[in-house]
Amino acid sequence: MKLVASGVQESLSGLDDNARFRTVVMPHIDEAYRLARWLTGNRTDAEDVVQDASLRAFRAIREFASGSPRSWLLSIVRNTAYSWLRKNRPATIFTVEDLEAVELENAKPGEPNDETPEAALIAKADAEQLRAAIAALPAPFRETLVLRDIEGLDYREIAEATEVPIGTVMSRLARARRRLIATIQKDR
Image 1 (tube, rainbow, N blue to C red):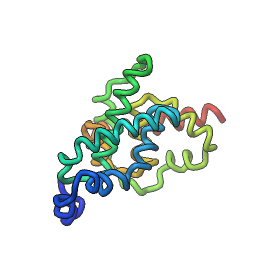
Image 2: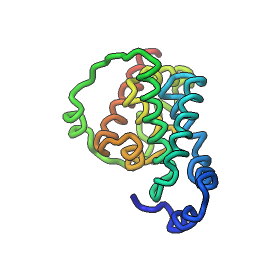
Image 3: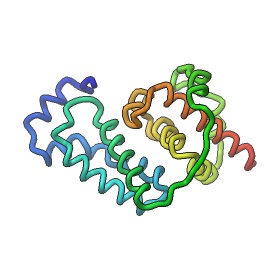
């Protein structure tokens, strides 16, 4: 990983664990909560996940040397959320198409700030309907969509946070957006 800013590593090296935690983790705690909220589906569970993730981040704070603190923390939150869900919720089974074939078909990187027809439709949708449609997405699609379109992470940061290749990130994002559009159009 590359340093976000060259002075980050130097400024962190002299700090105790508490100060380092405040510098690295706390600026991104709201984003951590929002991701946990989307992954768990409710406020109380999200708070539990963020608390567990914060404890994990604190224990590992000395291991954080460089890179994006936001990606690092969101990766911890994601892993904590899935561990928490496995422990506290029954498993649900869903099927998806062949991811590799879809990845190859949809691996057309674009400019993330370009207005797409999908983004325009999503922006016009009723907020509650949109929340429900996002919540109904399978977890891999939901987390990718939330990290990209709500939290604003770039493809590389999402790939780091979710520990999947960039092609998978692009595929999941495209498929999540297609499913959202289909759901929203069906409900209209």
